[in-house]
Length: 428
Image (tube, rainbow, N blue to C red; front, side, top):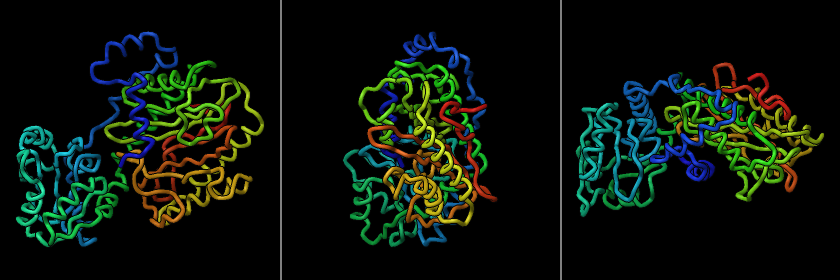
């Protein structure tokens, strides 16, 4: 599941000189002249251990238990993070159908364009389905949906219930429905979300590392920031800092009144003394995201700015204190929002204009959400952003965001909180 912010940020990476194939010479030249705080960073890449095929097999076993629980006979997935999560395949979605079907019982199978078979097999050979998946190929003029129907019939599921992973395009799910009219299609979120929303210790280790890397990158860029820099200048510093640390990362940058727009503005901006600077982004470590925001200032903040920062910090803290196993997700949003409303920045979404947080993992935004109406009960291992903010139109905006894991006893952030406007990273 790719959020609007993730999509826009991915596009921004290419425009900001982010590491792309064929561009390494120019990047190397740029990084010969790095500011001291960034040049002093060293790679942390060796701290990241990849997810193994054995771990993915356990995920498939859990998915099958959930299929039985929810009366779903099989789940179909195409390119994207869910396919990667279960199989290790990294496949871009196109107009050609490549799909993996994992049944509750029996052998998994793949529908694959014939000319892509070797490439698909290459990706499968070291994964959890190696040697245990049948491949049904189709030529360019043939109908892949017939093969879906055929594969399910061979598994005795011609009239079964097929869960469709939620990012599968309508054109594909509609093609399946038209070709296999006796098949019942249903939402696979109880399976995909049920597996992916609860992280194991290895996933949490990767997410902790991602958050640590991003916070180090932010701090180094902050130490190198200068009045007069453009938002792109500063964003580039953050990307370079991530690269020095061994990972791909980014942050959007908004200054002054533009920080009152939670996802920012494309209007050219410059860092000015006494104006809040809101940065928001993250990085991936072995496929797992961080998502952090910091708001700081070069120069002296006004009393109003300091007061708003303190309110937002108290709201973030209240969310941590409230979140625990068994509580509904909406209750965490309500607790943080009450702090902001009681301080005079309400009601509702008037100044705190978005939900408190979102699930995070292999997608920056995934199940479930800390928002009014979300009755899902929190479980140990669930991970969320905790990102309250106050946005005052035409003045400034302040958001503090760290990633949070639900524990057996409550909740904890993966990174230290930002202590103050003037000292946004404290002793970190």
